[in-house]
Picture 1: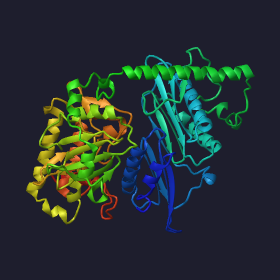
Picture 2 (picture 1 turned 180 degrees about the horizontal axis):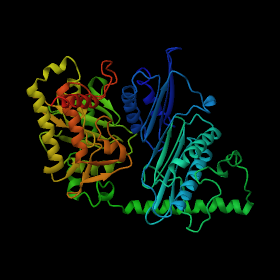
Picture 3 (picture 1 turned 45 degrees about the horizontal axis):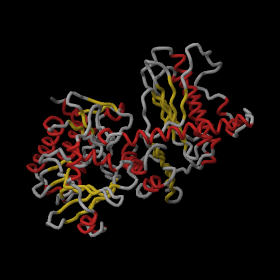
Picture 4 (picture 1 turned 135 degrees about the vertical axis):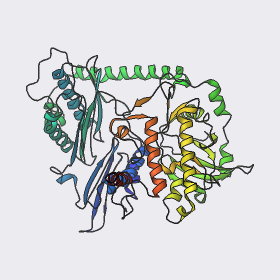
Length: 537
């Protein structure tokens, strides 16, 4: 718990999104390592690691050596300290294989994967101080692209990173043969390949696919060839003439300049409505953007309302930033969400999103009062709800006495009505994707209001589901098909709602790693009780 209070923030603030910590003395010593994927931003890194510190002690209770892997971060803690110089054999890994195989030209697909992994690993160890790289290769019409990612903890030397990845690739190549996707998640090094995009940010390595007539390699295709030898890593091997070196430098530079110019020209012509489409075919109307402009509030007004964002007015803080209580000149109480400057969302994209959220009006949804986009600030102003969030009352042994069965039923019913509006009754079709007790706010009469639409996605009226390669949300509330395959729909929100119903009825948090009396998560406990009762029905 002591490490968990500091390590996520230290890692998210690090340029490498990496940190280690050591607390206590032998034999009660704890060493921990936290690393976020190279394409994550600081805010998402902090959220991922905070969640990891909540989930891991609950998933591995009383274990002295545990590791948990998410798409965007890894957390490991142990009673044994692992130093970069003595980790040649200690690298706990988790292999995952997609059970779907390439159906057309599997041998050539395997060669493409091998070449892409080789090039991606080579780039990570020779061209990146963070020991991270992403790659993309062409294949065929059935599987147009193959994507790859490789990363090591930044405290390793490039040579040790290369060895760690090479051993894993060679060891698991027979298991992953022909699969269209696989990954090795390791404490010190990880890699992954898929036929669908799964990372954000630019592609660092691009390869053209091999032809169908290419000769098969002499060795197993997933074994890293000479590009990963120490000589290659040190820059030895192929020699270039001076004219050749000049061309190698000038041609990519000229191409890069042309690409940047073309991008800037395209960017200037890019319509605002296309800047942040929530689903294919959607575009915000001009009157929607104008409605957001009409909600703009001066920064001076909000500074005065919150006492210049005084600590005494802070209501809470999360991965998005802090929330402050304030009072407008007309006496209306407000909650001001101050988005962190590390957020990747731009001003125009934010206005486009707000144009959509402003359309959602229901008594069981938190009302958006206004927005401020001045002085590099991004402030969202909501109505203030005096009873704060549901979790502050429900999981407090004293405060939850306020919630009799009538009030609990009213809260459940109100959340359900808000969800029905989002899914069926509004002019938009919205999947929230982050329903949990802390995102349910309570007014003076304990009426619930759904809040925080930062992860919400809009669906077309005829759309039933979508797939994402970046699973975001809160573990414990997310549906299994979303966690495992990235599939989300209105059913995902229904699953999260079911978890909340169990929490409201029992007064227990689904995965409470700080409760020594709770060794299993709530869903496991309820399932076990149901099975027990079923024996006598």
